[in-house]
Image (spheres, rainbow, N blue to C red):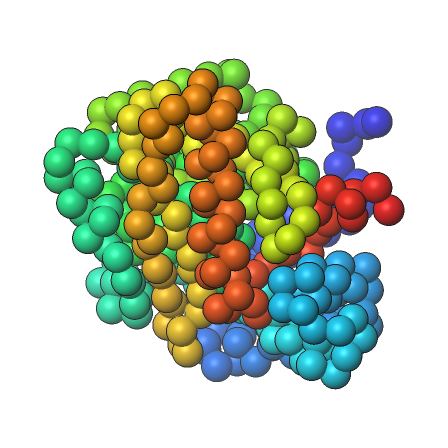
Amino acid sequence: MSDKPSVTDRVVAAGFAAGWKLVPLLPPRLTRGAFRLGADRVWARRGKSVRRLESNLARVTGLDPGSPELRELSRAGMRSYFRYFEEIFRLPSLRPEEIVRRTRVRGAELIHDTVASGRGVVLALPHMGNWDAAGAWLVAVGHPFATVAERLRPETLFRRYVAFREGLGMEVLPLTGGDGHTFAALAMRVRRGGVVCLPAERDLTKSGVEVDFFGARTKVPAGPALLAVQTGAALLPATVYFAGDDWGIEIHEEIPLPAEGGRQEKVAAMAQGLSHVFEKGITDHPEDWHMLQRLWLEDLTR
């Protein structure tokens, strides 16, 4: 397959470039309304991504596929998803103190106390709410961190996303296509008592760990649990959601390191523990779970 970007790739990249340039210059009420309208139009067409979102939401909520309740939830989900994009275009223009003021956090002491003790932290989170705003909050309260980024197409879009996150104070390493030392760099950071943040409910490497998730099997990234097992860092789940016009973050209790078993068994047990915490967070805020792709193993074969 050619590495040359398609016309669609180039249009998407141009759209993101325009968003980061223009959205901060426009009144928030105008841009929020425009993105909400865009979400409603995409939802009304009920294309492939919306149907997949509804299928995923039906599994996690138990709502009947095609029911009015599920359709309303998927509309809220698309509005949440589009809100994320409107906010990332505006986020670089916000002052750190405003980000802190607008972020409602439960469990922040779990990060602060662990880092103060000299121990590293691996924060693992699902694709919920505005995780970039959560990252900006973490930097603003004194914990710059490292993360990984999926290599997007075209390369210009990937570089813009990296530049955006680096501008917020994050250290961004490529998930693929880098120098091959991403895991080692993350391990070095937490061994030095630093913080790493990683997405943890969708495996993009094809080498993930199988877990039970909402009653069915899926694969999740091994990285967060493996980092904790190999370095002794605290593995803290985090769930992120929208709280009115503000942002909510809940930092959950540390996933304990099993006392027995080999490395693979410990990683599998901790990955399963993460998944159980994510189930609760997603159940509490299903509209803010941005999962528009196939996730469960049985769905991947259809």
